[in-house]
Amino acid sequence: MQVDGVDKVWRQLSRAGVAVARCTVERLMKRQGWRGVARGKVVRATISDSKAP
Image 1 (cartoon, rainbow, N blue to C red):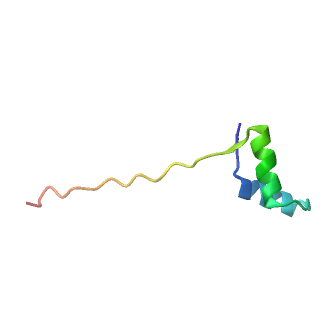
Image 2 (tube, rainbow, N blue to C red):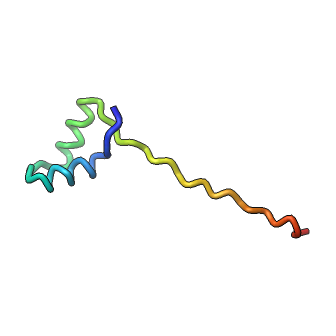
């Protein structure tokens, strides 16, 4: 299952008033088989100058 990463889940829990350590969130996510979604990198292609030698 792909979800937010440990940091985002931990922050959401903190905002909701759940006092839990970040390492606990990490351990529980690993036990459940949850993995953070890996965002893709922005591809920057070189724009060639056809007038260049």
